[in-house]
Length: 151
Image 1 (cartoon, rainbow, N blue to C red):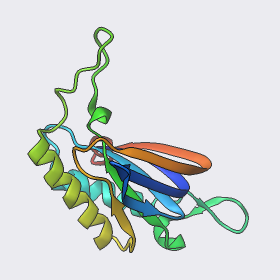
Image 2 (cartoon, rainbow, N blue to C red):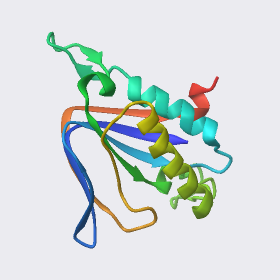
Image 3 (cartoon, rainbow, N blue to C red):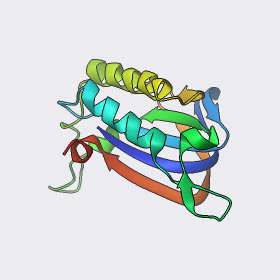
């Protein structure tokens, strides 16, 4: 499972001009579910993201977590994070989980984040053509891979 985290002042996702998720200060998480990912991948990733100290304290040092600041999270499914670009010029997405399994684990991840203590968890619409807008804070962008975190 792969996640791209962006620290934001605000973020919103729309589908057909309808807002499906919106947050103020917090994290926009683009989440890719790979073939072979399990609940354990989601558990590890959720715990890491909720507690990652990437928000600034009063001394402008990254010492605070999403939980500490009481920020929100907007989670957007993005199978393209599973792209394999090693050959040719067109990425292949064979490494992405099948849609039913990917959606199940995406929803599981969202529930797991709530169990970590994040009060505001908003989502996109799985499988839809989504437009994501955000105002970066920093910018701070971090890439996580559950496979590397489980080692």
